[in-house]
Length: 113
Length: 245
View 1 (cartoon, rainbow over the protein chains, first blue to last red):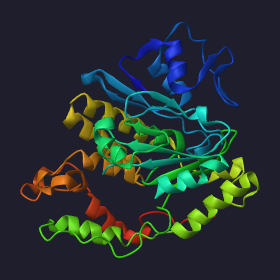
View 2 (tube, each protein chain N blue to C red):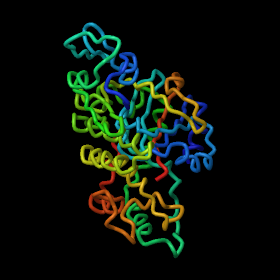
View 3 (spheres, chains in turn red, cyan):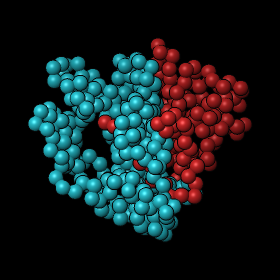
View 4 (tube, one colour):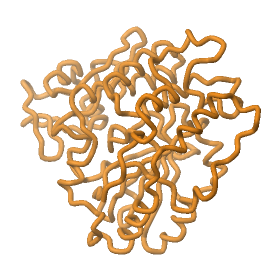
């Protein structure tokens, strides 16, 4: 998740990472990580990242940071449920993978290099 | 190729979603997509979200997802349908630079599991969850790429590098791409993407495939490896894991 500040609205953190910040902790699927205090309207990303074991890459000279994915369970997939991938098409229109529920989907990654 | 396969299997409730992994986004992918004229969703992934979300480390790769949105096969190399590679490899014009010729020579040595892969795909489309090739959730997870804290950090560096490149901070991007390569050494997509952002004009339409030191100024190459160098070092036969049911 890309960041242009290390203090962001809690909702933005939740949407960007898929982790919900509840009284019992930061939760995703069946996993909840206890937090020292319930976050308010804004969150200190650096502190939260440390508590949750989320890596943070920094380029402060350019005002940019990136919060990496969690590494729980030692695998790229925490669950077999496909994440609701949303990506644009050539015209910039967003497409949601979940719109294909009811079909067998083959997601094919390619590159022009 | 894939288009024809998709059209053939569509009546059985099958859909193909192609995703172009490229920092250069729509502009990098446009030429190929417009040439293909797809009837299926064809998406652009500038930040390699497919690496984060599904553990893609190579292209072309596929993930199979069933009607309930459950992954039944995690990211694995996806060969072109059988018959796509019939006949000898295309003859390169005589003026083709030696490096591109050498890359092609290595590429044709990469093992091809097209028959077994596509046999399995058709079996799944036919039988659904009853197919031997559809994995249960625990197996899907176990067979996805390893991800430890170092690799996660590598993903963060890659995302940061991508943003820096898009913002025009190329040198800073290179530093973070290098970190991503160091932390996720098995990812060919992280490497090839970064290398492709150093186009060599002398290679004409293949500028982005050069992926290595410029012939006239090799010392300016900012990476430790390159496409030809890495495939030779690792062996084309080891380029990806062989397909397993």
